[in-house]
Image (cartoon, rainbow, N blue to C red):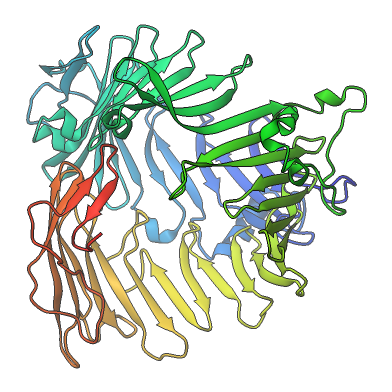
Length: 630
């Protein structure tokens, strides 16, 4: 049911076969008007999924499978509008082959092969054995797992990219191996004797066994709670718990360098009530640095504190016709907001001030929806939001009032409209007293996909979307710009696994179509973007190529070449970048290209030549970019 009157409803009918298996699902009215959306499912003689057909628009609530398949062929113009599965013989019942929809994918399915590991170090089926010491949590290497002790699944996608997943007898993933020919990229997962994840060892760890540089590390106390974690490029983060297993203290790398930590407080129901940043004194004492966040629940008593006495009236509930009404329990008024977050206060650091405290108050309707939010702002004024909701709990309208002392209020309102399936179809916006405008309208096709979007009511210039049989976006069109994406077709090398093989675009009334053909390496990473013009991208080729000349084991780009316009009629390399890393952190970028772009075009500006050009804080955040003089 979509509204309180029961006029709009979402009806779904599920049909079962004689063995009680669901085989036909019909979503009434989903295709628009009196048309419905149907999905057919078929089984093999062993009761396993055989074919799962794509959804199709029907006029009647029930169609037999023969009529439904005829309708599918008419809709998709493709006889393979389904996903099919092949299995191992009984009793394993494991999927060995999955073929997705579309005749273009014949012979291009997903293949699963099943093996056991072997102990030979050079084999693709070998797996190193790591363990963790009890108590200390130290990582140990103990050769390779014995043969036939692990199950291995080799997954080969539609384009032949292979990956191996190794699992132990408890079903835990120990290794994920991606293969580029005979070159392996291995990610190991290491558990302690209690089955808790302690280390994740990415591919680069196998070449340089530096835990701090590469590994994701987790430590636990005797109760199995994570008390320390360390990510690559970051200092350690530590946690302290109370007897109820709640975090009461945490400290990250930046805080540790400043002798700070964060303290958490809870109420008797285990709800977070405050987050406070503290500092450790040299004598073991503690000082308040910044009470970052407070939360209030159940009632509005906090509004009557002396600190809020001056602004209480501006934070009180104010009823506005057309929006939600605050729920008040007439029998027990104090229980009206029981269990709900009623307010927050946040301390914000400002230049020249110690901090400024911002408050927010929340009011609810009888269903627990926020129907009004009142808050203070940094300008000394207030923000007030009003909400109304649909019967299904989605926002139907919103009104925002922004006030600043000495200035006129700024008011805007938005409305949100939904169709019978609860999909967003229209958003309108009104600024102050100006006429309301329609920001956009969504149009859905008979298969439930977004087919068009009309902006600002200009129905003569919609943005339209097109898809292939698998529902992948293939085109976006507008009178001012259009773009096409190609997967198995188009001028580039066909990609069947979802990678884009090429794209093209046109601007406005331009006669020239421009685009790129994309190439990928053995691990499905982008290696080349080859520029061209014309219907097959065969004119003015290579003018704006981009080429990734190398990746490291972590997928970081080691080299990048960009081509562009260097003179009125000339095109050449404008960027020949070499990138250096410290672990996963970018350390230096050197540009070996001596040419610059024509007419102030875009290129990388090698602003400095130092061994370290990028700096980071203890949490891994970038703090300096010397090439940009930041």
